[in-house]
Length: 604
Image (spheres, rainbow, N blue to C red):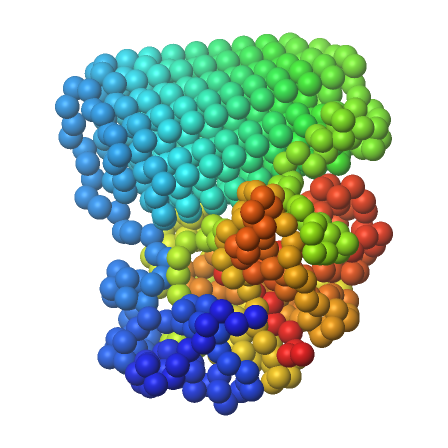
């Protein structure tokens, strides 16, 4: 498919784009498509030379804002000066990117409201360090905070520490966010009678992590309510370390936490340890979710008169895993009640006194899925319609749903190969890489991004897979031609029209006559500069198809789809099997090439 082609005469030959076009012409016999050329570095010839010299001198970090701006990279802004002073009642509407270190310290009464703060932002970095510390009767409201944001990094360190009374309210916080990284460290530590509520927190979010470390530690009479937390989200991870440790009279409620979520992973370590008279309720926790894993380590250990109530806990389909290690160990007078509890659980060193299991469900995952499936719809509820489909759907006249194929990654460009070759790229040198991009603390979004992507790039290939992470278009060319030869064409879906609607399939063409073929698919990875995970897997067919409006039958798009014929090594919990109702090796699975992803194949 031709999306438009570059004209070499229009580009300065000394820019990264000019070099790329010469390299392409030397290595590949077909034309360079415009959609790929547009991902090349936008640096001018002079900027290219200057930043190359800085890379030689290991000095890019000292010019990071300028480098990020001109090279079109993903970088988090360095913290601005702290905003410590405020009026009696501050209303932060439509604010973004501020540093609230020491804000509200020793505050007496009053309300600070963060409404529509950082909404629809791209790369949001907010710091709330020591916010409301030592305050009395102070109320903080975070309403529709960072909604629809992309790559959100927020740090609440020692928020509300040693506060008396007051309330923290997080409502619709980080809803519909892509890749959130939220950290609550020593939040409300040693507070007295302070209430916290998290309602619709990270609802419909995608692929993020949240950590609550020493949250409410040494607190007195604290009430924490997590309602609708993580609901309808995709692959969210939450970690509660030392949450409520040594607290007195804590009351924590987790209602509809992780409901309808895909593969939630939650760790409760030393939660409520050595606490006194705590009440914890998990109601409809992880209900109707897909897979998932919860790990309760030393939960309520050495506690006194703790009351723990699990109602309708963990009734997921495609059974998840729950581990209770040292749960309630050495506790005095615990009261633990499990009602309508799910399957696949491990209890080690568990308190033997004061524990009741009522209607403990111990049935197969198939039976669980059947009981939860409402007319067959619940099982695939949260796998987006049309994300996976069968090969037989690729026929003219077929009407089918088109998933949201829009690119959700931050906008970035490749770096020139000359520059990227001078940057460290391995987990053994992650410290150097963090220094270049001002990653900050280990738990920050930038640090997590660097670590996760490097680990994925260094992972051993799956059976039959050939893989490489490519950090320049030249590297992508080299990998693809090493697998397919020089007579190759790179294709991507033309645009995003038709997404989230029913479409009609128009004319269909099988690449290489529709035969089983070799291909190299390249998918974006989250990194400061453009980076692709490229891999070749055996036994695929590649198709091009006109995409028509299902009502007018007018052509609105031209799609590229790939069908994987061998799914025998895929996980049984893969979304394709959840959506299509099968298992590894029994069906082929097809999917569209999403915006800004691409597939390479030999030319016809």
